[in-house]
Length: 68
Image (tube, rainbow, N blue to C red; front, side, top):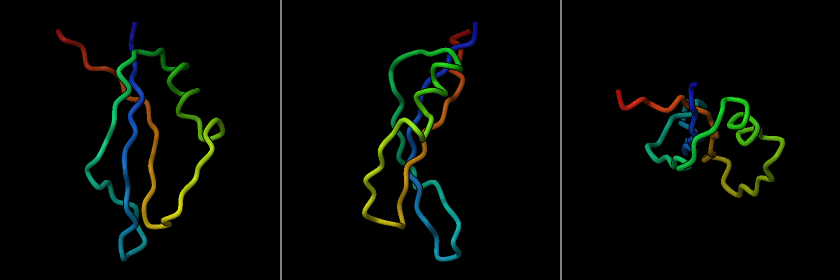
């Protein structure tokens, strides 16, 4: 069975108006099914309080790498 982790990444808006990954991420240390992870990553379950329009965070599900 595949397992997934929730990854939170930081992004910055460039002068060209494109979002660019700025190198910071957090990984929740808990395994999920894809469905569970996608439920947590759903923007509809989060309340955002952003005061800087040039930075944002993204929540994504990534398959956990196997140790094999």
